[in-house]
Length: 619
Ligand code: ADP
Ligand code: ZN
Image (cartoon, rainbow, N blue to C red; front, side, top):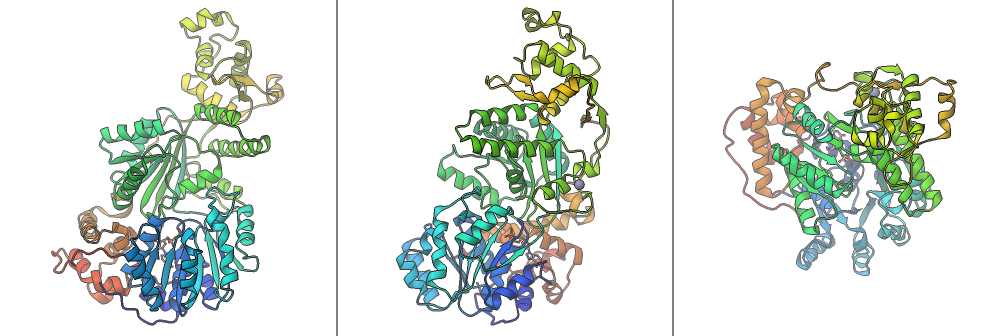
């Protein structure tokens, strides 16, 4: 494999020649130039925004080696593999390497043969490593996932606190800290704790326009999921989040029975098995990972086409982070969630039972309320989400369920009164299932034995079916008319907020949950239809098969060879010469040399003449 380094100076040339891109994304160019000139930077960009190039290009333009601090070993290897594919001199130092491999990297560093060195935070500040760094010219420090320094955030890592020392030890080396965590408090903590208070801040929009947000009422979660997968994502890679380990295992097993290539991931699996599952997910093109929130941090897979939630996340922050793992490559992706009254009951109960201090509980309760409000929206979800994170989107997005299929609302005042008085008459001691039975006047043993068939509210609700009542109870819960009793059985009780409604001083308009079967036909967006015209399907498969062979031969994930977006551009442009191939976004000089002819052959329907020898590329 060729690793020779082309001396290049202008950032724009590196962008084009090495990475194969025509222009910088918004803010990228500014960050790069600021860093090249030796400035410090704090960069906030959403997932998929293109943070890596912000330090990779300055690393290649400036003299010396850039040290990149990254918290996750798997991620580090991926980045280094991709850089080596692009002909960049990069390596990493972490605990997964043998001592011989480590010595080899250290020698490369001392010989000035590295443009980028990725280092795990706990290793960076060891005496041995500091002594090593003091012997070489450093071009910059990049601190990736910088929110790990914040205790307020969700991924606190104590090792990160020590990174402030970098500035003291190497005061003249510019530093860049990067994160996709948007909130104000985390941002301030990063600046303070990493001594970056005077660094220039680059804050980009946090919108992810290629992600389509959808929330559907939960009916039969598994079946809904399967229908969604079959309708929109046959053969795609994606993540399904569930709250409990048991549900993860059951859902994964069930999906496999249905013919979906699914795996499970949660903290109950051994470390080795988790690693293996994660690796299989990363290198497969069509795997569905069913997981608890233990999964996801450090998954840099660009072609995750959907993130599905079968249970409600605890906060919008968590939801946005989890859904953000879809569509890093900028191609269309789905954030899909089903949610029902059980979610509200369960999360409220978890909150009440938690051992957290009252102040903490209050914060968590507010976060849950915000999450519920999002679920019940009838207007643009993206506007609401961005607004929550302090960003204004002037127009409705046109790419969420509320924009695409505006939900109807109905005057639910009368029905809500019936539901609330049913809660009251039954003694505020029952959950949704029983309350619905009473309202519908169901002739069952429980109603009779409790004497509920004698109540004035027995059978007064025949205008709605069970689904309609469940929807109503869910919305009453979400809006705070009802609360979950602390008895642990999901019993509902009235809140003070009910009074005006019960006294007839208030009207209530609620969302009409449409059953999703039949009726309106949803927009289909399978991979084939979404990206590739029918006639191209065969060639598309051939390109992917070729990429798979190359990836397997080198032991890297397929996207390290080329991203889907690059293969699609090949299909659209049909280059018929190496010169034309060089202009396809994402190709670049090194990949052109290695793979240009092979993919030209595949595009022209020929068997590739030269497949490279198998070799493990990294380190
Ligand atoms: P982040 O680290 O912010 O999540 P990445 O650095 O992984 O994002 O970049 C996301 C995707 O965008 C990658 O596929 C990358 O190759 C692509 N990308 C980055 N910058 C550009 C650019 N200027 N033009 C085209 N694609 C880009
Ligand atoms: Zn919208």
